[in-house]
Image (cartoon, rainbow, N blue to C red; front, side, top):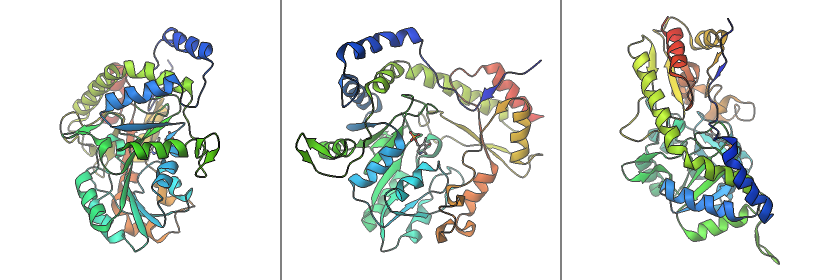
Length: 368
Ligand SMILES: *Cc1c(COP(=O)(O)O)cnc(C)c1O
């Protein structure tokens, strides 16, 4: 018997028939892009759902990251994490900014505030942390450092859709936060992204920058890019949003079931959640430690042999890719915790429609 293929994630799609009325509206209005009615409607709906003041929709999160840095006129050096998807640091290179890598904490796998300060130089202008796997950074400690050294904070919040702490949305920390709505993320618009900002003026500036810098028919104020989200993507987002709470609840149950199944397995550590309602259960990372009989890569291969495609996020570290590895801050001696995490982490399949029997099968493969 051939076993069925299980990927690390699969997008949840509403029934196709439900999307038809949206398409009909687009066809009828003939408004396909440029801040049309669905674009406006999705911005309003997301502000309300996420509990944020202003949002600017984008074609994807990478263009949003690049534009976010431009909107704050960031230059020089930016301190960031090596333990992320490569787009985080690439957005700096696209702006001619030098990334400076600092190490992460072993418990959260987020940028370690105590490592940030020693990475600051006279050229440092900002910090770009990542809420890795949707687990919030130590936002208060990071803000204290930013305030003391007069630095901007731009969060790559690509994983942090709907993540709250006791004060509300985690997206309200720092100067700007960037979401990704890529197909593999918790909330998707096929491709898409957004910048969260705190005031109307900043939103206007970002909206100009994502539309070539155009302010009016005769006025162009900056060398902006084309980063706009289309009506098709925005309409799909509105439909997706209607099902998001149900999807998050299914993810929560899968997360709890994995924790139950893997409890007490020697050498396997599940990342802990800090408190209630913090996570969006977008990822299920485990760390395969020394007491486990197999190395991480051997477990990865074993699962793959049973058609279970877990992913080694984030391996290799960003700082190990050729365009970064010769930078002084990329040295492994500077990043011991990130190196350890990259060698031990495995993200197990998690998505709303993952069958509980399949989850049990995956857990059994890990246990035996
Ligand atoms: C997915 C992701 C991005 C890029 O998002 P796109 O929408 O695909 O451009 C950036 N940073 C992190 C941490 C991501 O996981």
